[in-house]
Length: 293
Image (cartoon, rainbow, N blue to C red):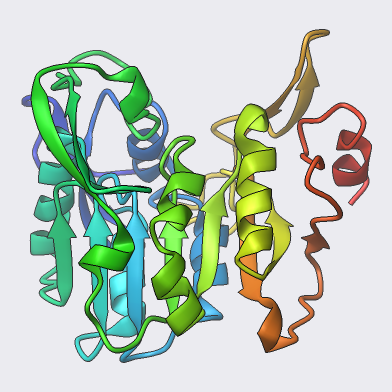
């Protein structure tokens, strides 16, 4: 299914994927494993992004991880466009830079840091990544340590004259990123793709998006793309909702929001609009709506 161009040495694998050569940590249980198994990562999301982007566009990837989406985003906008990719975790950032270099994506500006509601410096741990783990789900609030990481407001950091699209995947800090970007969002009105898989943070996030005058739609991509790059037929993870009696868990899928400025007067077919601030796929009262489509 895959060829490791580095052999079995060390913690990393080099894989020829759908969107180019990618360096991955062999211990990464989600992003790395998906690239290794399928030759792609959440390709349904990539297909969605492609509907919004064209050569010359400017994109911001907040929480870029190792670049599994940064690389295809950069290919979409091409050398006349620009991608700003933010990743605060040191080893993820180094791998991100390696993947940008491997694919000669010189129009991507990679920043080791994060975006938030205020300009500050967080002290986080230096994660070793030498044992199996989900290294795409490292929440900065859960990583106290002694390595300084700069956090900026997008309103203070962004200087480009245009902005088409922002992807935000920051493990529960999505509302903070939006709060620090109010000026940029008011000026440029980009489309937003925002992770919303944390039930306890969802209401605040939806309220923030509502205050910014965005129309939101649920987008629940599956890890398994039947037309995946390596032609694998067996899903890596089972897909669906599991009720353990305490709460509902989503398995084998992402829970995200596609957000369009209300001023665009767009109506997106095939996606479920967010009905209210308390709605969430993992909310027991709401799940039947998502299971039934």
